[in-house]
Image 1 (cartoon, rainbow, N blue to C red):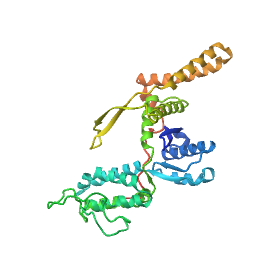
Image 2: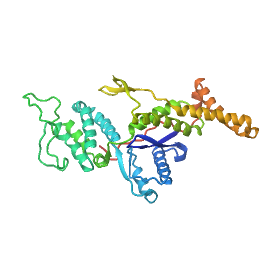
Image 3: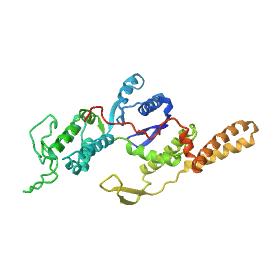
Image 4: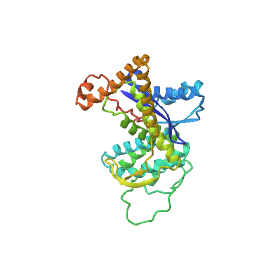
Length: 354
């Protein structure tokens, strides 16, 4: 029911603003919630005379049309796709292809091909990104030098050091003409993917947004249906929390205390968890003091009693929502809703069939 669109400065990783929308504002369409949220964010920046040079987004296909529509308001804005979403899409589809008969060798290359795509996005620019990525079609065949081709552009050799030669066949090699290679080639050379790679950016804000979402769930529990007016408040609280940590990190105040490796359910390799020094959140004390001061003024000024009653009613609505959840009445709340769950994910798969 509730959607959030976050604007992040990619140079500092600070969160500028969060737009909170209810699904009813876009006739229940999740992709259109993203579009409307981005429109409001761009107008928010434009109203303060900010100059936008470029923007990096997920692969919502409606975003380019929105930027064209708003060109008069915001000027020409370079648009990039977040490379994380491209790598995720490629990895998901590679897993699907590996399930077909005689295609099991593809899973051996799963991590390496995803890493190769990410490296191509990091070091390349424009058409070079796809040319670098396409060299993987040679590497998986154990071919590391080749004549010039359209798919690989100016690149005619792999970028790694010479591999040690052996008389034994390499078990991970995928030969041209096999079912596994044909499916991999079709996936790599997918027209939509190739077009999007030319607009890929490694400076996307997905990691920031994921951290922000985790904080949102701390300040506003996802299982509880709060009054609609509260969601913007919770978004502001989590934004202040995140920016406090980020500013402390930029100032060198968040030193790493320990690092551990964990194995997650859907990943074959371990990922790192970094624990850093805690940071005081002074803004919490300031908010608490401001609330206490406001309530004191309400009690001292009888004319403010009406406003106080409104505030108490709003607070009571939030308390009732949490009590309903804790008391086991959440099913009744779900049954009374006609909208679908807010976790419906926008399908990022390109329109072209693989």
